[in-house]
Structure formats: structure tokens, C-alpha cells
Image (tube, rainbow over all chains, first blue to last red; front, side, top):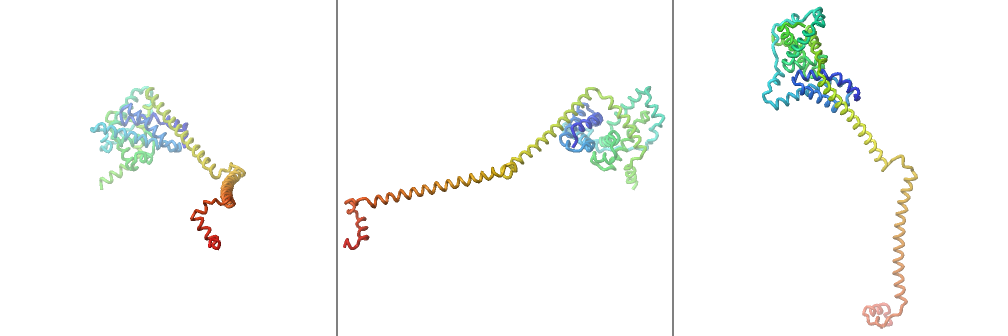
Amino acid sequence: MASPKELSAFLKDVEKRAYKRALYHVRNNESALDIVQDSMMRLAESYGDRPANELPMLFQRILSNATLDWFRRQKVQNAHFASFGNFESDTDEGDFDILESLSTAETAVAFENPETQSMRVETLQMIEAELVQLPDRQREAFLLRYWEDMDVAETAVAMGCSQGSVKTHCSRAIHRLLKTLSAKGIRL
Amino acid sequence: MKKSKAHHRQDHLNPVLDAAGERLAQILLRSVDTLDPNTLQRLRAAREQAVEQHRMALVHVAQTGMSMAGHGSVGRVDSEDPRVPVWQRLSSVGMLIALLLGLWLIDTIQNENSLQDAAEVDRVLLIDDLPPAAYLDPGFKYFLKLSYPTKSR
């Protein structure tokens, strides 16, 4: 059983990423905070008796469900909620060449130069803007796999789908992000 | 067939895509460090509330466990609590037996007294003088006839 100290340390470690992840989905600051708070309370109330090493997976699953619940409530409140329909939509990747959008190692080092601070901020904002435009399932798969640093199997468990679906969602998400960023002249 | 090949290809995330995904995530993670103080404060409050909830749940579980243990010991007192000495249990049985004996003795004495009272009444009646009016009673006359047939004849 996780002690209050272990639970506190875990939540402190994940709370910022959880908030941003929720924010990318719901695009509303208050709602994102509510979702994170709700997820924390659900974890403490329902799964506080679980070992500390099980908390990360449980929390990610709870956060996903809380986000989905938020979309469901929004759908009930607004029958014409268009974004929710994106959950199962997909886009074609075309013949986009990934390698062209990736910079070399030297370029990546140059990217870290303090003189390019404004460029970094601009790039971050562009990626965030494109991320929120992704279909929800693709965004969720991308965030769990790379943002939360889960492996494919863990992501599949958290999303309640197959590993193949996770790979497909991630692949399409990265293709779309790189393609859009490349069109704007941004290379990573 | 062509479609299934394309689907199969999508199921395998190649290393280049993986690297691109990680690089995108690295850039995105920088946004975590730029959260405003108000948001951080609210996240901290939410975390503390959840931890407090967890702490209360632990206390509740502990109290429930202690309560159940207490109920268990109370249940044993009535039947087989080893802390009650043998002499105390034997004295309880002895007192019960004494009570039953006392009740039996009282009942026996009361029966004896009522028999003695009835015998005393009979004795007084038998030794007392017979009143003359008794000879006018048909029942008594019939009694004398049966008891002393020769005299009455």
C-alpha cells in the first residue's frame, strides 16, 4: 500500500504533465485543472491501497477516463460538439518524407543556443497548436507514448486498445505534426 | 491485399518516427516549466487534498480494523474468554444450583405445612362433641346406617 508520502511524491512528479496533457485535450485551463484534481481524488479514494509502483499506470488510465468523461459531459451539454467526433477520425499521410523534416545532430545543438530563444518559444507554440488539432485518439496515443514516456504496451493498456492501434495512432500523429511543421518551415 | 500491406506497415513504428516523436515530446515538455504561479498553486492544493483524502482513508481502515478486533474480544467474554478465572465460573454455577435447591426446599416446606393444617382440622373435628342437629341431617343418618348396620336395625 502506498503511503501518503509516496502518493504525494508521485502526484508532485506528474501533476504538471498531467495538467498540460489535459489542457491539450480540452483546451480550457479551468477544465484541465478540474480534470487533474478529479483524477487525483479518484486515485487517492479508489486506489490508495495499491502499491506505489502501480500508481503511474493507474493514474494515466484515470486521467484518460476523466478526460473522456469531460468530453461526454460536454457532448451532453452541447449536442453539436464537433471535436468529440474526432476521436475515431484519421488522416492520410501522403508521401511526406520524415527525414526531410528532421534536422541533423548539429542543427539540434544549434537549436539549444540561447540566441535562438524566441525561435524555440515560437516552435513550441506551433507544435502545441498543431498538437491540439490532432484527432483525439492520435493525440492521446502520442502524449502517452512520448510525453509520459510509456512503452507501446503500457500505452495500449492505458488507452484500452491494441498495441497495433497505438502504433498506428502514434505513426499518424508524428507524420501529421512533422508535415505541418515542415510546411511552416520548421525543422526539428 | 495492398490495403492490408499498408495497414501492416503502419503497425510497426520505425525508429526514425520514434526518434521524431521523442524530439517533439522533448520540445513540448519545455512548456511544463512555464506554468503560471496560479496554476501551480491550484495543482499543489489539489495534490494536498488528494493526499489528505488518502490519509483519512488509511485512518478509517485502521479504526475499522481496531473496532473489529474489539468486537471479537467482546464476543468471547460471553462464552470462552480465557481471562475469566475458573473459580469465578464455578462459583456462578454453584450459585445457580443453590438457587434451585432453595426454591425446591421452599416448595416442600409449604406442602408439608398445608398437610399439617388439614390434619389438624380433621383431628379437631373428630374429637369434638357431636351436635344434636347432626342427627337431623339425612346424609349423616345415611352415614350412620352404613357404619353401624346392627345398631340401627
